[in-house]
Image (tube, rainbow, N blue to C red; front, side):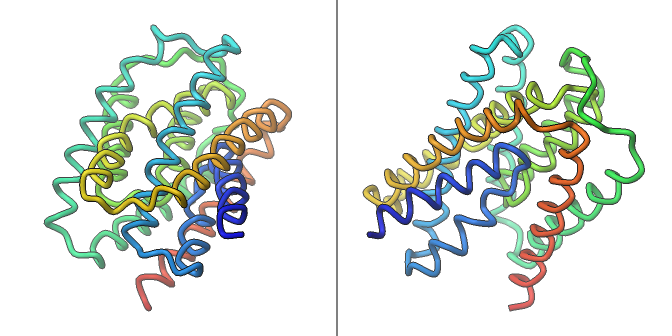
Length: 244
């Protein structure tokens, strides 16, 4: 029964995560309530998110919405950010990490009202003076802590005038890149409960494909509303965790 439940948890989390980020809103509390140890929860989440994110990227690539030439520079930038962030995380307290996450998400939420981002742009993705430091910084944050990383990246790509489905493909590649090292680390630490992880992964792969198909039908104007809802939910969850 736990495996079936984890499958649907993974499916729901990755569907939401693909559309607006914030899939951890579902997986983290649900698995903790099931009695799974915290390190195993995080490790399972990293593995399932890394693999399913890559599958989403490949799907968008095969739909010819993005190209490898346009995308591949994301990998070293996000990987470097995630790796350095992982090192920095060992030197910061948990309360500091929560504070950083809350400040970043509140800033992104406020900027969503001040900017004219509507995910209807048709710009090509280039390593510009905004894109490079933006992706590196979010990768850094993902390596340090991570909640809301996908949501922050969607805000970034929206600001860069990237259309919604293309932005999802780029976000998923960046998520794969910054999360890969963390996933390997948890495997080497021996913290992975593999049967539970495989059940979550199977659901995440299904949710990733559902998310892509829903994204094709979603009105760009509704994306901003969905992003704001997910952002507020992430902020609330982080504040509650930091207080208790």
